[in-house]
Amino acid sequence: MQAIVPTTAGGPEVLRLTEVPAPVPGAGEVLIDVVAAGINRADVQQRRGVYPPPPGASDIMGLEVSGRIAAFGADVTRPFAKGQPVVALLAGGGYAEQVAVPAGQVLRLPEGVDIVTAAALPEVAATVYSNLFMTAMLQPGETLLVHGGTGGIGVMAVQLAKARGARVIATAGSAEKVATLTGFLGADVAVNYREQDFVEAVREQTDGRGADVILDVVGAKYLQQNVAALAMYGRLVVIGLQGGTKAELDLGALVSKRAAIIGTTLRARPVAEKAAIMDGVRDNVWPLVADGSIKVLVDKTFPLAEAAAAHTYFDSGQHMGKVLLLA
Image (cartoon, rainbow, N blue to C red; front, top):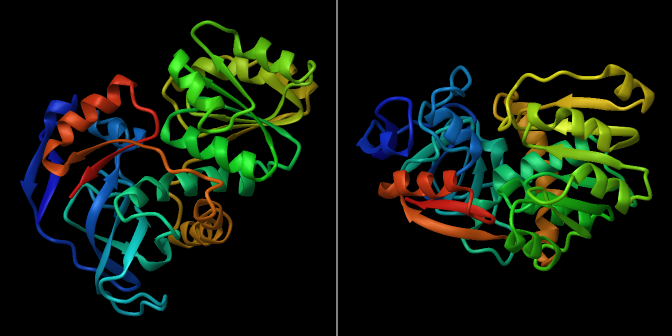
């Protein structure tokens, strides 16, 4: 089969379409004929050589796909049929014509979503649902601050939190993205971080109280500001490190708010944990996609052979929503 394989660590230009052995589904796995794969920040980090796949995972990039069931390994108990359209959460292997994945990480498409568009959903839905509701325990009426509100994670976080009764403040880096946040996505408040201090904006919008939960993809660069923006008993959930890995922290500021900082990653979790998360997505997110409460935002699609161009566009930061590769 054909897959995207980097020739070395580096920029988008290192990505090449290459012939590789087709995967064989093991016990408890299904084989999927890939239709589309989502591009995520983790793929960029892997391409750069700073985020290797977890032990035992495919070296091929790609953490989410849509496609059709092609074959079954032994002991698959979930009720799938050959040819059935599905989406899957992966530890790797998505930038290819086929991928093998544990059956617990595979879901039927939500109603009303076509098979290509559905590739934009599994990784962001699993990340957002697990972090906001299984980890941070975001409650109706609480205030959520989302950084990178028009990225793939942000688009899902804004809409899912709103649908479950939270008040949402989101950051973005342009007037167009700010308008998308408050218009198409329904955020209560959007902050242009290039022109405004998001800490002051959060305090102003919450009468000085702060955000109950912050979902952060930036990391070190925003650590002090995020703690300053937290409410009493607030929860800062760090899921990305685009702004670095090391920063000073005033523990007094954290302790005085009786707040918590939580760091999580999805890719390296055990299969059983991922299956539980995907069950939660099926039960709590898919119905909101089906009834239109959550809109799927796909910015651009590229053929698999043009993965380098797709990564160049993704790296530019111009996109709003997901960028997909078509197998």
